[in-house]
Image (cartoon, rainbow, N blue to C red; front, side, top):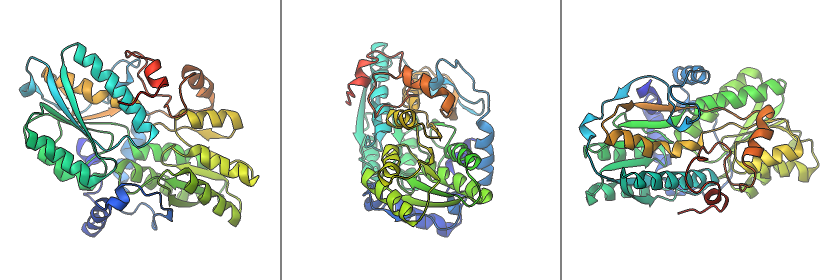
Length: 403
């Protein structure tokens, strides 16, 4: 299991991999320009992996080890990494190469991560965390990682990759330093990291969302799929799974890359509505979900069956309109886990080689509870952020105090 998630691209045909690599190192792509275009052509393409699809489908009902009140520390039992060689006393310096904080999901996580950092600084685990933000650019993040390596002052590396193939060599160079390396959120094509932390994954998201929509719609119904950018494993896998299910169910699905730009999203929906009725909307990330709903309202059309995300703007619009919806979750609390993993690593404790966190969608029956739990939080906040026990709650998140 540990290897399969990281090598989704590697198992593809060589020609497909070369094409993908060229795509993801283009700054015009990785900076997310917002240009709208129809996206994939054939279902799954190089990103579909039947074995991984099956594995993540099963993991949706797996038993997670650990305290359910601390989901950011839960995991599926499996291969572990012996970290005894990293055990030592004293506070350590962490170097964090971050893809970006360019969207509300990443901003929410970044706030939570910094509050977790403060807690670990107080207990003497971490002395400081030097962070470099790549602003959604592969080449910048590669340079950031190489800077940390050359600097030579890092006791550990934390890396949230911008894209999958392009960042793999830089992650491997970090591993070659002999220091612990924690990769989280998005994967790369190597198993060298001390631990790879992520919710179940993109296939699980795609299965949850496409099964929901297919169960509400009929064969021949039209779904518009809104995708934020190419070349990121968890995003590509979401669509690969959903596209497979839509085709099997006879749902007509057309996908577009949007750059998460609300104006582009409204244009896409408006253009599709001008061609005929649209019964469903599928998204690979909830940022911009409200704009999609507003496009139907502006056109005076019946609102669609829809999947968004656990961002509060979408949950509130869902409640306001009464649409038939599901909020898939790519657990935002994972931003705490890398630093808590390092706490264990610095003690020489074993950690999961692949640290798979819970990933449970919000259903209609749970909507009111999650809205009540997050009352007073801003629209860009994510309901399942998992930081309620940290210092500064709720004010730091309410004020969006982004470091």
